[in-house]
Amino acid sequence: MMDRSQVLDVLKTVQDPFLHKNLYETQALKELSIEEGRIVLNVALSKQDKVKQMQIQLEISSKLKEQGASSVKIRFDVLSEEAIQKLGGFPVKKQTLLASGSKTEFIAVASGKGGVGKSTVSVNLALALARQGKKVGLLDADIYGFSVPDMMGIENRPEIVDGKIMPVERLGIKVISMGFFVKDNSPVIWRGPMLGKMLNNFFNDVDWGELDVLVLDLPPGTGDVAMDIHSKLPHSKEIIVTTPHPTAAFVAARAGEMAKHTEHEILGVIENMAYYKSKKTGEVEYVFGKGGGDKLSDLLSTDLLGRVPLTQPEPKQGIFAPGVYFEDDPIAPIYDQIANTVINKLTK
Image 1 (cartoon, rainbow, N blue to C red):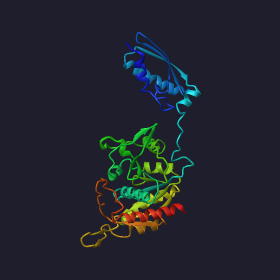
Image 2: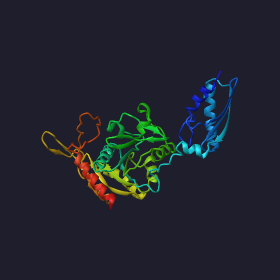
Image 3: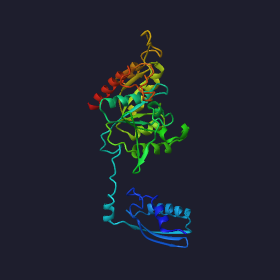
């Protein structure tokens, strides 16, 4: 035989969709009748909305029937203005990054092909911008080849607070990645509309807070995801990553031309894996050739922002982040110089 306490326990698990508080907290239960397993309740929500009422009716009914109710009937009412104010009022809707008044600068890091170190550049550019005092977010938009969480040594996952996804903070950077939402490194097989919906979630359903810069690690090439992001961010700036090899530069030019076609400003080119310097002898070897960065910057009529050598980041004691060049790493000043150049370009 069900009783009032069981009904109240169920209401503790159901949220008012507008106040983001459970129906026990809002004292939504106005009337209750229980007779031989048949339950009739009057529930007050903070707003009158037929769709939300239907959803809540289904949720409450199914939960009460699991507890043993034979039938459930629900009448809906509306909380008084006084009751809503006592509960703290409606949550203020936070401005999204895509809102017209947003002051966040978007920097998309792109490449023509995979394997050129685009994600490594994205991670370390974000950290270098943070070292210059900027509030930085990092969006791992490489949906098929996400790698940012592993590079930064991120083990925890985002939390949901008041219906918003909270980015994971790591090394002073707010991070969101498709890798957070995939179980056991499963392959992503989404296409078209599903990808677009996920990208919308990354921009609109994530509580990024106040950011000066959002760095986006784009998928390589000019596929669906890159096109979708270009259309969503009409004022994005772009950095193109290449290796010194002439073929890599030629392929990367396609990504640059796509940025121009969508009227995105190209901030410059970064030549990654530019050379290898032996720690034993100091000898410099150009493993992938020379000139790719210069060739690409000439083709795109933009600047060569910097050359980053082929090397492994030096580990930092007590911090696992295998893709990060920390501030005391010999490579960090190269990224700091690139970040300074980028900031100067953004402020012009």
